[in-house]
Image (cartoon, rainbow over all chains, first blue to last red):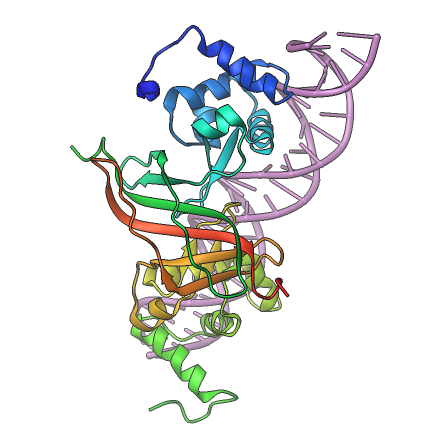
Length: 150
Length: 150
DNA sequence: GTAACTGCAAAATATTTGCATCCTT
DNA sequence: AAGGATGCAAATATTTTGCAGTTAC
């Protein structure tokens, strides 16, 4: 389960290509690099973070379009945040199975601002008032993360 | 003593004035009208909705500043949404007691896009991984609301 | 070769800031 | 009267769109 910390894995490229292929997307440099970034960091990223981390290698617009495509294909998903900034995250299930509904909890650190996908904590069932039908649940917890708490 | 020369709904005006006063804010037309709007609709509102509903009576900037002030004072709060649009809501507890933490569930209707504060449903306790400290929980459920479901 | 993707330019939209004027207290 | 609030202008930031050139397959 230490997948989050790993450096460069030879088969990672292959995996990324597979993800793209599986979703009928052509394998381009921007898509590969951006997906790679999500895998390497393991955390949620914003548009500007991606712009930074890729060293301005890609056009701002390309990043917008890439993220949009990934969201449409269910490769990544947006995370609702308390400050309403736009965050995207690649999650294991979504990544490997193309799921669209991510029913896990997200955690945002107030200190370092990192967002974690807590994949193994699923969202609880909520009993809604009469007449309301539930299709999706987003749960965001904020506080201090394990790195800042030491 | 409430003001002597008051129009339509003395009760509500007084209440709104009280809220402002309690928060050391001067009672101005924009603040009163915007607060009134939140009370009247009972739902979450976006900046543009407010602009619409107030009939362009106030400057765009004034609305931004009013909302920001209200958030700072804890009169309203932002709601994290799945599509990352910025929504604000006045909630009963926050309104009457000045609470800052709103631990209730929000519901967004996929059909009519209305956002409800489900004040009487509180957020569940989440067991976080070791090392994580929780300070706030935001839970947003989306689906079909009671109005659209009939 | 063709369809899809990218980069550039520019438009459209959203948000913030400075300042002079007006309003609340 | 004084300080805060508003409106206007403009700066800044964010996101979208059109199109021509390039790349993946």
